[in-house]
Length: 318
Image (cartoon, rainbow, N blue to C red; front, side, top):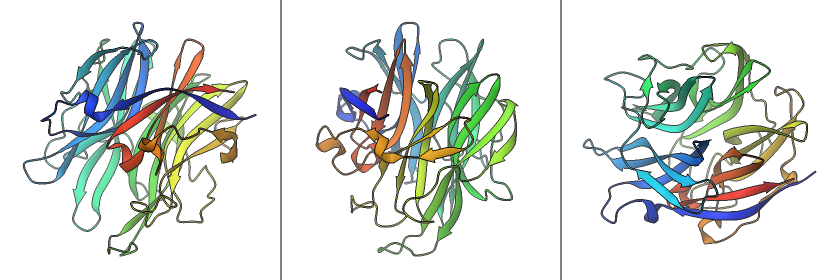
C-alpha cells in the first residue's frame, strides 16, 4: 500500500501577518476539527526585547473544506513561563488534544542555554471549550530529561487507543561540538514513546522507536500517528545532523513507518509519496501533522526554511 497526497492549499505567512508585523514563521501547524470549522495552531516568532528570538503559539480558523479563512488570531494563546521555568523563553510545537470533556494543549517549552543555545521540555496546559487560550497545569513540565533521555524533550503527539495513552515525542541523544562548517554545535535527536493509563501517568518508556537510514546521527522530529485500514501509520521528518541549512540533500524530508501495536514500527519511506507542488517546498519538507475531518485525513507540513514562509495542506489517499 502507498499513501499519496492530493494538493489542497498553501497557507502563506504573508497572507496571515500584517505588512508591518514583527512576526515571522508559520511553523509546525497542528489542526483540530470542531464546531464545523478547522482550527490550525502554529508557532511563530519575533525578536524579544533582549534581542533573542521568542517563539509563541497562535491560531487561524478555516471553513471545513479549507476554502475560507474565518479568523486569524495573532495574540499568543499561552503565556511564557516565569523566571527559571522550563518555558521562560518560548512556547512551540503545540498539540491540541480533547479527552472526553477536557481540553488540553501539549507543547514544547524553550529555555536558553549558554553553550548549546537551547533546552526543551514538554508542558501541558488546559482550556475551556472554545480553545482560544490555555493555562499551564503547573509551573513544571509534564515530561523532561531523565537518565537515558538526557536533553531536548519536545514535539509532543498524543494518541489514545483502547483507553491507553501513547505519547510520541523527540528526545536528544547528544550534542556534537563544533560539528558544522561554521563552528556550530549540532544536536542529534530521535523519536521516543511513553505509554500509560492517563496523560499524567505515562509509566512505560521506549527509546528510538524509528530506525535510522542516515546513520546514528540522523535527526528525527514531529511524529504524528493515525489509524487507517486496520493499521497504525506514522509520518515524521528527518535530516542529517550537519549542513542541513544550506544543502537540500541534508535538509528535512518526510519519513513514514507503520505498526500493528503502536510500539514496534517498520520504516518504509518509499510508501509515502507526496510530490512537490512548488518552490515553497523545493528544498525541504518538515514538521508534518494530520487531522481527520469526517472520513478524510489531511496532511499539513512546512516547506523551505523550517516554515518561515508557508505550510501546505494535502488530502491523503491510500
